[in-house]
Length: 101
Image 1: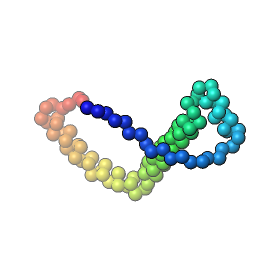
Image 2: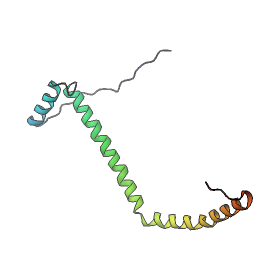
Image 3: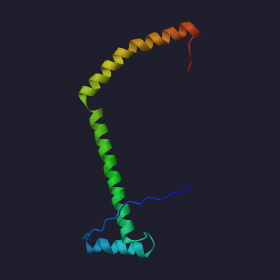
Image 4: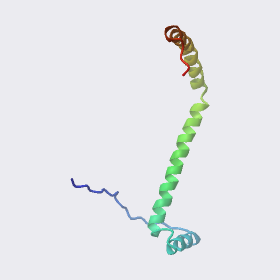
């Protein structure tokens, strides 16, 4: 079996950076903290995009947690199933003497 590695397409772009930021990048690369300018920029962009994605997910969960319509639906479902839960526990106690879980 031959395993081939697929690499993402690379696109060359031109980016303008503040001189002091580029100096810090170069210093980090010079002391071995990153393989190259490009590698550091790719790593930084990937980390920032991942952070932003997580923030978006958190924002959506926050919106759901504070949605009054969803909260009302959850209360209705809880009330609808509460009786069924009591019936199930009663039936279990009658058939096997209860379950301590």
